[in-house]
Image (cartoon, rainbow, N blue to C red; front, side):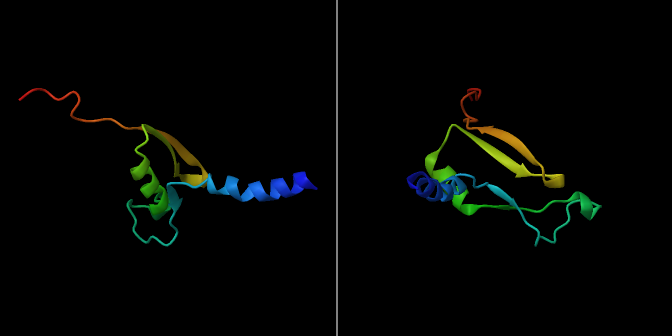
Length: 88
């Protein structure tokens, strides 16, 4: 019985960790291509964006919604564009 209660308590916590930075936006009427069936609207999750901006991680893993309910898995790495700048 204790194990069942522990599992039921922990299930919502796993759901919180599965948030995505981007979600499908079905309400978006903007078409970026000539063929509307080849356009996917996405929406930025501002709560996750704020967390990323506050934490300043060196690397983040992002799943971007794609066609046929597939996601593109992308790794973004932080860098400074001025590190390799030529002297003036």
